[in-house]
Image (cartoon, rainbow, N blue to C red; front, side):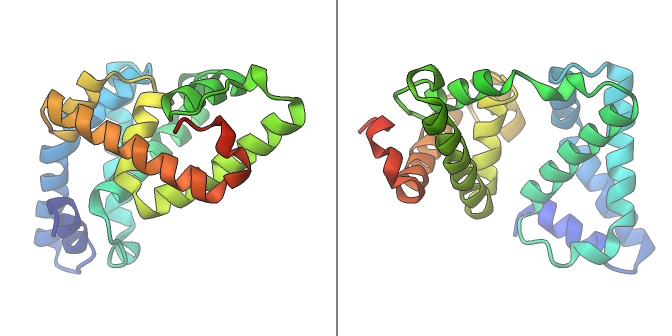
Length: 204
């Protein structure tokens, strides 16, 4: 069992000392890379620290839901992202998490995930259908492979480089490159299975 999941299950208990120790353990293990992620989004150090504290507070208060968690790292990661979006929206800073315009994001996703055509090469109908199919493939991939999905999102959507990803994952640079490559290969398999009508735009 991974340590994040162990700590989340401890947080789900009614034993206050154990819950406090688990929350501290999550902070000690993840705070540095969580802050790095938030700063990379464009948050100031003050904002990033506020978001992290809000995230920890949410963790403490969601006691009843934690016993059902199966993937500790992915659960924490999704909660951090949700907390950051709520914080930016509440403080009129949502532009920090919006990233590129839709077409730019789609083109980048297509390029990074090994798809051959950009959105400009597709008709409006094809682009709409491809975007919807890509969303379905991403949803299925995230459900089955949440950590690999997060790694791809950090590179493709958030604009991280592989050095930043390596630091976040706690892996060597070489191991991270291999992990990212295998994650993209795995996603292409999902895309080809879920979106066979667009098979011609996928590299072989």
